[in-house]
Image 1 (cartoon, rainbow, N blue to C red):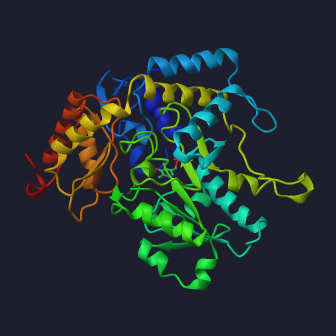
Image 2: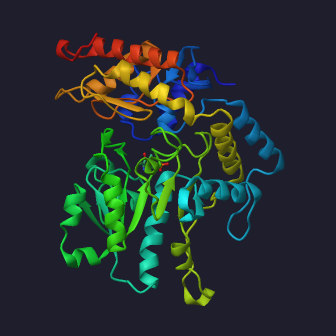
Amino acid sequence: MLHLPDLTTLDQQHLWHPFTPMRQWCAPEHTPLILVSGHGCTLRDQFGNEYLDGNASIWTNAHGHTHPAINAAIIEQLGKVAHTSFLGFTHEPAIRLAKELVDLLPGGKITRAFFTDNGSTAIESAVRMALQYWKQNGRPERDTLVAFDRAYHGDTLGAASLGGIPLFKGSGNDFGYRVITVPSLEALDSLNAGERLRIAAVVIEPLIQGAAGMRLWPQGMLKKLDDWSSEQDVFLILDEVMTGFGRTGKMFACEHEGVVPDFLCLAKGLTGGYLPLAATLTTERVFDGFLGEPNEGRTFFYGHSYAGSQLGCAAALASLRVFRDEQVLEQLPAKMARLGELMVDLPGYRQCGMIAAMTIDSPDLSLGSKVCLAARKHGLLTRPIGNTLVLMPPLCVTLEEIGRMVAALKAALAEVTSPECRTA
Ligand SMILES: *Cc1c(COP(=O)(O)O)cnc(C)c1O
C-alpha cells in the first residue's frame, strides 16, 4: 500500500502526462492533484478536498460520476464478459447500441455505426472511408479533405493533419493525404473548379470549435455548408466528438440546423464519459461503396483491437437510457439560461448550450492557467485554453452547482487579473 507522498513522487518519477509541460509538473513545489473519487458533479482529491467538475472531465461526462445506472450496467456486463474481438465476431451490446444511435438521427439517412475507441480514430475512420469510397467508386481524383482554420479533430497523425491550430498540429502536416484549410464557407466556395473536383469531403466541428477556444460559427453556416456539400456531391463529415450527447442543448449539434451529415463522429460523451468508445456513423450509400468480393479489395481494412468494446457499449446503452429516464435534454434550457445569466457580464462571454466561455483580454497568456489554479481553492476544477476559461459541467449539474461554479470562477478571476478585467 502506497502512502500519498509516495504516490506524488512516483508520478513525478514515472509518468508523462498529455498536453502537460512536464518540467513544471515535476518541480518540487508542484503537488499534483490526485483525484480519488467522484459523485455527481463533485470530485474529491487525495486530501479529501471536494471540487465541482467544471469541464466535465475534459468534456466527456454527461450524467455525473458514479451514476448508479451506468455503474450497474458496466458491472452487469463485466459479469458476462469484458471484451471480445469485433473482427469477425459480434455481440449484443454493440448491436443494440448501433440501432439506438442510428435511430437518434432523423430521416433514415444514417444507417451504419463503425466503432473505434477515441475521437481521433472516429475522425480517421471517416477520412479513410471518404477517400477510399471515391477511389473505388469512379472518382479517384477526389483525394483532398477540406478543413477549417483553427479546427481541432484529434491528435493521431491522421486526425492532426486536419488541424488548424499550429500548437496541436505537431511537427509536420503531410501525413499521407492532401488537406486544404479554409477560413470560411465563402473561402471554400471560391476555390477554383480544379480544386473543387479534388474534394473528397469537408470536415467541421458544427456550431462551435472547441479547442480553438470555443469559437462560435455564425448561425445558419452549418446548413449552408450542408447545402454546398450536397450541390458538389462532396461528403460532409461532422465532428461531434465534443458537441454530441446533449452538450449544445440538443442530442446532436447538427439538429439545430436540420442537418444530417454523411459521417457523424462521436466519442467523448458516448459512454456518458465512463469508458473509451467512439463511433463513426454513416450512410447506406457509403457502406454500399465498400461491398464486393474479398479479392476485389473493396473492404474497409481498418480497426482497432478494442473496437466496439463490450463494456463500453454497455456503458453507452446505459447513458442513452439515462437521457430518456431522467429527461436530461428537457432539463437543459433552465441550466443553459442560468449559466448565461451568471456569466454574461464576463469579458468575451459566449455560450453554446451547456458550453460557456469567456476570454481575458491580455497579452499575458499565462493568466488563464493561473485563474484555473486559483479556482481550485474555491472548489472548482477546469482547464483553460490560453486565456479562455470554460465552464462545461456534466449535464446533470444543478442550478445551485452552476451558481457555485460561476462564483468560484469570478473569485479566481478577481484574484488573478488586473482591475480592468475584474467583474463584480
Ligand atoms: C476531443 C476531440 C477530438 C479528439 O478526441 P480524442 O478522444 O481525444 O481522441 C476530436 N474532435 C473534437 C472536436 C474534440 O473535442
